Length: 604
Image (cartoon, rainbow, N blue to C red; front, side, top):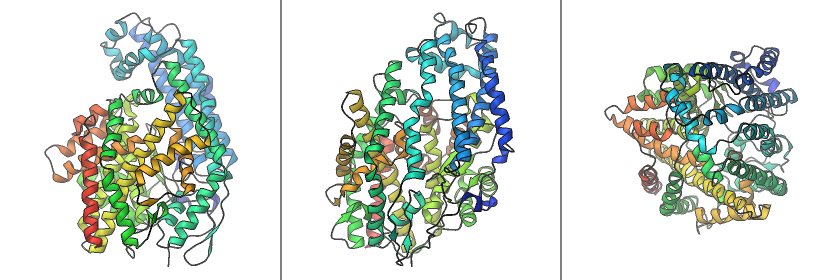
């Protein structure tokens, strides 16, 4: 019998408060939120009083930077609260309205501060560089160095103000996607393993539950219902994605970048060769992936493998998942190599107010961690008592503890780390969990199950995310070449990539072509490749810590504490891995190949 899943989700009002995050740590009430929003909006004019005066002295510049940081933290707090409130129930009009107001405040802040980068880059040659040696500006040295680095791509104050004013419009395609995804899509119901009617939704938990069902009929029926709904709206979704891509190209060109990809990677000082090395390494190691799909077909006894078969359990009858509280204890044990302070702080947070645990109607699908300096991190989950949820929890916990370590060690202006660095901390925790499970399970079926999970994780986070990265690069290049981005053109590019990555041994059903129109990360351009690089870096660093290499743990904890005070490539190099080299990705894919071979032997 399959795991029971209620066809009707609870409304938010019916959720036990003990299973939710504690937003009172941000604001005690919506009225308190409104008060800070109004106060912050009224004070934004104070920033304008510095326009034209930043060159007076280092002291004047420091006064502006202090005020800017104070108001920025207030804006972020207002936005953080409204976003968490909205994500817990996208059908709540009050919360949606608050999020729009928070977005508007953020745009007003961006407009109010739009002058200062242009003004600083307009200093006479060498002045700002000399000022950075002044003790009064020492806490802001790294951000000021970045402004000097940004000089070629910084526009006049008037032009910067116009770009800032366009921010809310630029987010329009993403908002269309979110609303269509969370509220307006309709799906045909299917029958579950027991013949009961099952309502299909865009819920990530439901997606995993059905696509990993041991019954092929359930996987196929869910696939057809799920992607059929997206196919019915493919032109609307393609239009939203196309305009998001064109927005990326517009902002990149407005600043003088050669491409949207260059603009996206420039922000974190990532060489474009890192992106290209990733794609090349994956293509060089595609054979192991295709070998894995062959193993799936043989293990499941299928004459032909469809994509909806590739997530099916290869080791039936093994259940290593845990209820939420028990899973927290498993994670606590698995993180022993990181020391008691790290893991005890995390356990306390996971059990007391950091996490919104379970699914409800209208809730944001999937999972994430969100942080704000001066406050504990927040984690959104749609937890189920299965191993996938346990891994997702430790993944998001890695992000949360990265935030906690960084916020404790760094001032707010350099505490926020980059996405490139963030995906290391999350997948590092996953590697420790896999190691712990293999150390504590001797049964061959259990071990096969754990190894299969790691294989599928590397497949999803390196191979799949690199396929997504190729898709982003190709579609942005099409926009830059003024080629049409119709539904057919977009899905045509995606189909070519599906054929290449799944290989000749997997049947690609036509409905899968619209998968590219359901991926929310495509509205944060050139984000997904960092999952793949993060996995590669995390596997390397976790192996060093587990081996007990001299200084490995201290270097890794130093990386977490560095936050945004260093460029991610530099911070990772100091931690013990060089991501400008193709070696870490190649090593991770070699591990994938070895695990596939182990799995073949265990399943034989």
